[in-house]
Image (cartoon, rainbow, N blue to C red; front, side):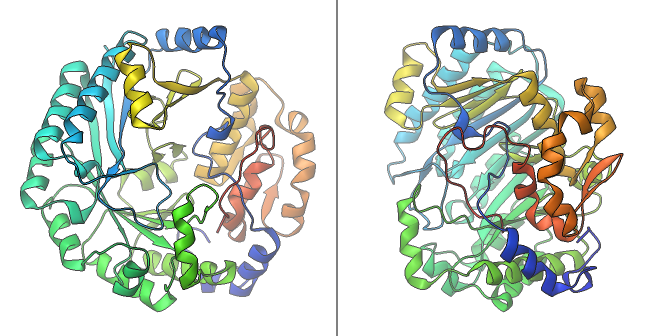
Length: 463
């Protein structure tokens, strides 16, 4: 299943994909970081905090800034994000004011005289903010940072929440990449998941930023979806000519998100049905000229993600796949996660305590972790698997001062079932997933995860 291989042309055949899933598919982290967020420490000491703050103070890399806007008017039943449901738009002004105050606090911890190369607003629904509050937020960020020359400013957009004037405002404010959360266009599927969304409002929102790079997010594994209905959705979306598409597998985690239990009354597709949805959609996108990127993205061949993937430069972080692994990621807002100079920090998850911490002048960090050299080594392996589906043993050995095969002798033994089943190649120069092996890359990555099991955590299934 390389970028040019359709499911029906897989070396081991379509049926083998089902065999792989039956044998190996199971819960595993999505590895937007290593160590993963459940292992960040809430019981940190003053010394731990000082160590993290010292790392922030000595940071020199250019900046990426993520701001989490948690508000939504209504909860979609598939949602796994950290959201707050409210129709009270007047809450936006106070939230924006606190985000900017948090930036001021963080500027006292780490240098902000570095170029801001990447800005991303996510949620929730960033476009829940009314135009005045959005203008104040972006104006406040501009006055507190130094925009880089090759900057990317992206925003997640709910097509139901905007009109042409709002989209025009976003362009005027400097946004130059738009990610539209669509998920599906089938009316029955959308009704089942509690998302009243028409195709025409999606088209109108996309058309309003014609000429700007556009991402469209889709989801498979939803109730009432079939191969045919998802194909129809993709056919419609392709006429909107997005540069990138994300094809996320619905993560059913009712132990974390109790509202998801409401979907069970419609019936959820099992592993085999989910696999057919994924493989059919994947084949359709490849046939349309897109290139497969990582585990869940597709892009036009000339898109920078596709170019980076071909050159072995694709990276993964809390914002997904990126071509800019060198940036320090600073996050603001509730539940925001930062990755700065070898450290991770996770913000408080509820608005009142987060606001109280910011107003006191302290950090809003709820959990922190300073990584070790061993963490950095294993992160390099895991992120290479997640981004490139391969690991150069020579590069890892050179960059981290180890002999790969010796250091990971026990892991290589644990990988033997994948090798014996034709899912992974382990030779003198590299680890490389085969076409079928791409389906269970998250499972392969867990072999290198020393933190897995240290902290109780449950994960979504891999396909």
